[in-house]
Image (cartoon, rainbow over all chains, first blue to last red; front, side):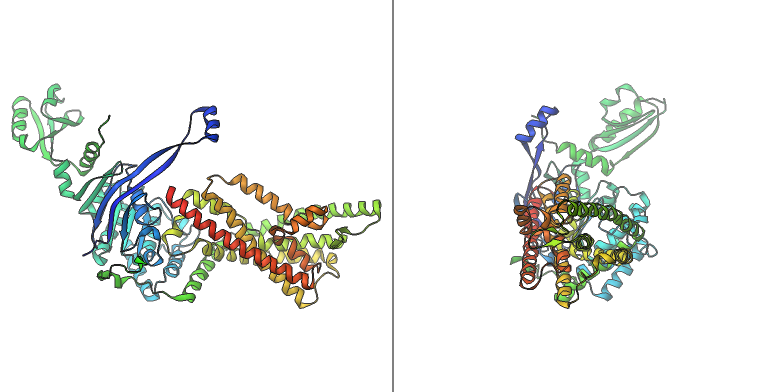
Length: 330
Length: 303
């Protein structure tokens, strides 16, 4: 099957105005402006098959949002190409725009002073959604998100989580085949986060919609996605399964030890890299091949109150991916 | 176009429930925007009403000012008419003109339009026009028409009251023939179009400059004078009145008012209406052109 989203060598460079220091600098800036080229996205290529649910990860400024903007047609690249649903996104063909949706956690698309249902009606007209289909989809979505009673309330009176649910409904009303989500759960409490996750997961299962989402919450990623694409400094550093990510970057096991003496011995660092230290407890990053040897050595030497071996949480794996993909300082 | 051939093998493509619905579909789309805008606008009707009443207060000082000017002119040179050789105004006509200019501006003024466009460009809400199958200018026109209708509906009573109080200024100056009425109404609709697309064009400057507040202030202040909102353009010395009457700004205030007062008639009226329509078309084209150019820049530099 042809990929539903494909990017080949996507590159985006921004020209950023450099401000000089002080009044004299500001005056000089009026005459001659200095610009710096910032490569936000640097030759990214990937393919996404229909029905996949992919997480797009990277630290702030890695180029995630810029890539999503190119895929949704808001900006066009300096080099490279992309296809979404067979269209070149930045040509902004109406037929393309009817078949995808972009949800941005920090941007509002609903009318502030009106109830969400009025915005939904407007979407029905803008997208030309047949009446019966509209009613069915709206019914399903409000039930799924448990907001049937809130659609007649002015959007400005809703909580952040409720508003996000409404945004999601608005984005899904025209049944897009591709859904791009930029930080859909940002700023939400855990309950609302889980509700959004649940909605996305169930919607994905029911409709097989292709989804690409960025998020800072590893819980979103773990709950939703099997495949992750990691970018850093505009470059793709990993593309594959979640499990593979831990294998490749999180080869280390995490050994948690609580010492009976109440304090961590000074020479603990020779057993492994200290990930965290807290009173009598310590977390060591240890090569799995040496686990037995190290545990033996520690137990032999010190009285231990508690000990456990785990895989490092995804958050730590990701941090490691980011660190290892930093370009070498010259 | 390559884009018209989206993934024929994709089984999901049958689920895209968006049939092309032709002209009627497009019309209902913008009608819905219009309706939603109307409802939204009505939420603030209290604010509306108060603003209208306050708007009439300067009118009182204007009447007193012109009373003094006409008294002075009569004492100095015995004249009771002010203006040029072709179009001049008696005192009553002057007050009637200044009242009618408010009607012109009711159609042509677009509070917040240019600034709103510039703000949407700056803060990125412009995105919604790029992501959804909808045109920004079409959307904004629907929105503005709704606001205008809501505005006219809520201010009808205070305006009727004002004109009733000032009715003696209009004695003998209310058009009696249907042609003048038709021309007047046409000039008001065209004034709306000229005003809308002129201000929209100004707002598009936001694509090139991030901060447009002072530019907008200059344009709006200039417009108050050169559109004839402050005084009839005929009162200016010759080169200036000729220049200003060949610019499009007069169609936003001066022109509908003098049509109502019957100062322009016959072939000249037809010619002027044609000019107004031509300017309306020119601004429509300019706004669309600037929008296309601006989007190209926006898509290249940010978003």
